[in-house]
Image 1 (tube, rainbow, N blue to C red):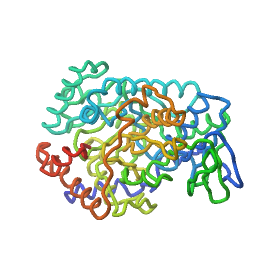
Image 2: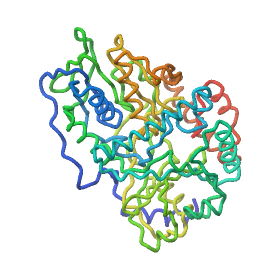
Image 3: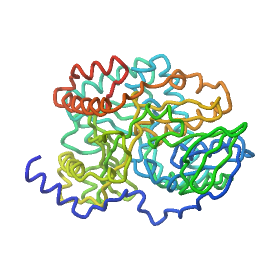
Length: 472
C-alpha cells in the first residue's frame, strides 16, 4: 500500500466504532429471560440466528398446535445473523458455478427451489410486517480484471444454455458504470430478481417477534450444553435447567454442534466489514446507484458492497481469516490490519468519495464447509436434525434449511429430502495442523490466481479434483 493511500485509509477509520452497525440500533429489543428449571415441548430449536428462527416459524406455520421452544446462547441475532452484509440470495448452492460443478443434474431444480424460497421470504416479510428494509433490487457481479470479464461471459452463456437466464443481464463497462460508477468496473452480470437487500439485524428481530406471536417460547442467554436421549425423546441441558423434547433441530452453525460427529465438517472463517457515514447528495450523485443493487467483484478474494436505507455504503470481504484450531473467540471480531486494507481498497474503487469516513468496523465468524453450501442430516434415530455450512450465504438459504430439517424430523420424503445435495455430505476438514496449513496454502493460492489472470495453480487444481474447490 502506498504511503499516501495508507494515510488516507487510516484517517478514514479514525472515528470508526468497533461494533456491528446493524446491532447498534435504538430499536433493538430487550433480551428475554434465561431458561430456569425444566421445560417440555414437541420441538426444541437450538440457536437464535436465522437458521433457528426460520425453523421455529415454519414449524408453527405447518402445525400451529405444535409446542415449540427456542433457546439462544446469547441474544437473538447477535452473531452472524446480525453482522452480515444483508444479501438475501435465492441461490442455495453459493452461486451458479458451484452448483453446476457439484450437482449439474439437479441444478434446474435447485434454482427453482431457491427462487421459491426467496419468494416465500418476501411473502413472510409482508405477512408478518417484518420491518427490515427489504428491497428486491438484485445483485451485480462486477469484473475488475479482463479475465473476470471473460469468465462472466462464459457463466452467462452456460446459464443461457440451460434455460436459466431469465432475469439476468450482461452489462458492458459503460452499462455497469451507469448503474454504479467506479473506474475499476469493466463489466458485470446483473441478477435482477435473485437477490434482495435487507437490514440483517432487523430481520432477526422481526422473526423473533413473529415466532413469539405464534406461540414459540424463546429463552435467551441459554446455551445448550449437551444433548442426550431421554426416553422416547431428547434432553438438552442448559446452565440453569433443561429441555425435554420429542424432536430437536440444531441451528448452531459456526458454533460447535451438539452432535459431535458433525463438527469436523465445518471450520470458522472470520470475515470483516466497514460501514461509511451517510453519503451527501453530492456524493450519491458521484456514484449513482439509483437502483440500489448489491454488488460483488469477481475475484477469488472478493469484496461485497451495498447501500443502506440511510445512504451509507457497507464494504466487506477480501480477507478470510482462519485461526489455528478453529477457535471462535471475541478477540477475533476485530482486525485493524484488515480494516486498513479494506479502507484502501474502498477508495481505489470509489476515488470520487475521498474524504468520506467510516463510522463502524466489525467482523464475525462464518461456518464454512468444503463444498461452500449447506449440508443436512439427522442423529439419534431421526429425533435430531441439523443444517450447517452455509458459508456466508445463510440469509436466504437458512429458511430452506429449516424446511429440510422439519422434513427430516417428520420422516417425510419431499422434493427437498430427495435432493442429492440434501442426501450427501461435504468432505470433512482434516485435523490440525493439516487444516491450518491447507487453508493457508489455499488462501495464498487464490491470491496468486487473482494476480495471474485467474490461472489456478497445481494446489487449487488438486483441491478441485477432490471436491474441495474453493472458488471464492
